[in-house]
Length: 386
Image (cartoon, rainbow, N blue to C red):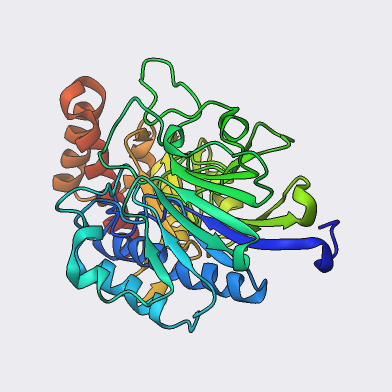
């Protein structure tokens, strides 16, 4: 940051898209629980960052829960983390997004949750919500989502700057700034929304990548990203935004800060050597890895593949090199063309079985893969007994 501490009138931490309670059904039960817990654990790192930077307020810009009626495990867990910090002079603002909108049955209307919030935590529960920031040097205007979808941007409900108003004006809404081909924009946001409303900074949520829009703008709006990625292919996730507002209403300074634990990677493996190289990496403990095995291997090579996969993924008795791992074997083929050499000197009955399976693998398309698998398992049994 170029500005000195004396030049900064207001410091904010901006976060969004926690998606507490989000499920990961394509993973094993154990891995799903690990990823669900990570969404709660990152909140503590966010709050510690707010403390270490002595911010004046924490802005939470929507989709804090993955649905409007989360299981009590998640809202009670959030209450525990909010209550663990004695922030009588550091307000926290919770904005309902399109995943957790402010409806009649919303968690934000649930008395068990709302009445248990610490006094410094405020739910944005109306469209004309305002709050002083930094002892009056700034003001927050925030507008909640009241439905899961809408074609009117919430930013339009923020009043424009009035004549003579020299306060630092901060907006907070949830919505989309870009049209996606084939889809309608949900709660749309034009790039000049901060200018139209006379805002020094517009804190937004929805897109899970860190993005400042437009880049280098005098009055920016920012997606801080999801603090933990939610799926494969999400780039630039795992951050929050620290926002420094200088005196004299000069351009705010936005600093991206890493808070996420997990990094999600997808790899297509086309050779045993690639898999071997992957198993030699030392940076996989915090990786959620999806492997697609696009291989055609002999029985001995397949045995090597299975050994490497056990090293990466772990077993019931040992931890793997990878934090969380999925394996797609749908494109893994076993090449059994020269398998007879492996089964030399077998008793006649077993030899006949091998020949029968070999014919199936070569001549019966619908049974070829199961025949190859059977040959591989027979290969392993023979190898173990010799």
